[in-house]
Each structure stands twice: as structure tokens, then as C-alpha cells.
Image (cartoon, rainbow, N blue to C red; front, side, top):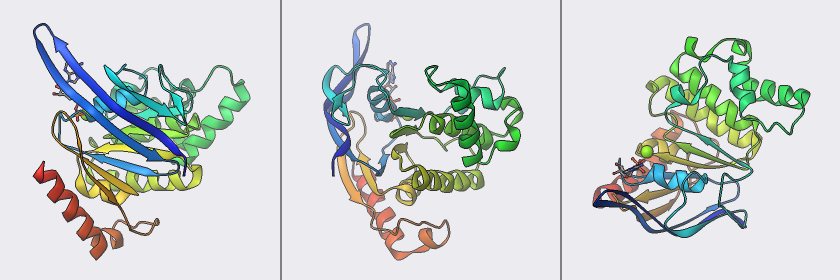
Length: 254
Ligand SMILES: Nc1ncnc2c1ncn2[C@@H]1O[C@H](COP(=O)(O)OP(=O)(O)O)[C@@H](O)[C@H]1O
Ligand SMILES: [Mg+2]
């Protein structure tokens, strides 16, 4: 299968004055088309830095990122990002619908943008709050607005940086299932960063475990669970428990 994303020998250091922090030092990774790849790594290992490079928001010191074969050197077409900090990624003064519309290219005409906004809001179950301001919604709903904004652009690759880390556990389970549904209905490739072992196995087709800084690949696990997942049945299955144990062992060994 043709890869959606190819990362080769990526290196990034942050320097402030005399001190340099090497965050990535020769990281290579491939994400297949139509795959949900979960990147699991300890806090501070360089996950967000990696995503910023993939999204064209930071130029790596060394190495290359290719999206569908094309070198990324700027914010690429066909890519959408959902950040952890949804509160700050939404415009508080604009309606939910306007926030979603904002993510769309001005090259699309108004009717097309309206249709896409409505469809994306319906897909995340927020059609009835389209006219409200995001500040009046719960954290989980605000994160759904951010997901709708990403989906409305019809991305081929969706990058998600700990997207469910700041919502409560029940909302989190709902958002996880929403992501799986959206993935099935939209056929989008997903690269999701998390530090939650169970979440990585529940959502992923593959789980890649990263070491502490500078992030290296320490394991690449194929998640051989049925594609249809269920919060209770899947998490209780022997195959799930085996995988989460394996991922935990790799994480601990780093
Ligand atoms: N803009 C920056 N300037 C200096 N250091 C940074 C910057 N961004 C991140 N770092 C440092 O780089 C390391 C990796 O950060 P990050 O990529 O955010 O990790 P993660 O997302 O895995 O928690 C951390 O030690 C962090 O403090
Ligand atoms: Mg991070």
C-alpha cells in the first residue's frame, strides 16, 4: 500500500542562548493510507514537536517529511490538525458554525462551505448548537467543534495531538468512538498522539511506542483487533489486555 506519510531521519533541537535541547534525532516513521496510527510516548519526549513538523509549522533541522509523496515545506494541502488545547484553538466571539467555516478555503463558494459546515457539525452531533458561541459549551463539546472544523476541510490526513486529554472519562470514551465512526465514514488517515496506553490500543490499527527525549521508535505494534471496537467488549478482550501489557512493557523499558 502506498504510504500516506513518510518521515525520514527527522531531527529537531531547541536552542535558547547557550543551552540546546535535542528533541528529535533521526526519527523515521511511515503511516499507511487509511491507517489509524497511535503514537504513544512519555510527556516531553517530542510528540508535539513531531506533529508541528508534520503540519509544516516547524522546519526540521534535518530530515524530510513527505505527504503522499510530496515533500512538506509549508502547511500542506489535505492536512488538518486537532490540538489538545481546544479552548484556545476556537474563536470565542464567533458562533460554532463560524468557527467550523473558518477552517475552510476561501476558494470554496459560500453554499459549498455552508454544506460542509452543516455536514461536519451533524457528523459530530452538534447541529443544534451551530448558532451558539463555543464558550457556552462543555469541554467535550468544544473539542467536537475542533474535530468538526478539521473534518469540514475533508482532510486526507488528520493529525491529533492528545485530543481527548482534557475531558472527563465518559466524554473521552464518547469522543474516541466518534473518532472511530468518523474514520469509517470519511476514510481519513489518522495520526494520533497520546500518552494513554489503553487509548492507543483502543483506537489504533498500529501503536508506535516512543522513548523519552530524543524520541526514538522503541516498538511498532500491529493492533490485531477487529476494526469495530466497543468500549466494554474490546477493552475486556484477551487480545486487548495482551496488547496493552505489551505496550506498557515497552514504555517502561525506555
Ligand atoms: N519552543 C520550544 N522551545 C524550547 N523548548 C521546547 C519548545 N517546545 C518544546 N520544547 C521542549 O522540547 C521537549 C519536547 O516537547 P514536546 O514536543 O512538546 O513534547 P511532548 O509533546 O511529547 O510532551 C520538552 O522538553 C519541551 O520542554
Ligand atoms: Mg505534547
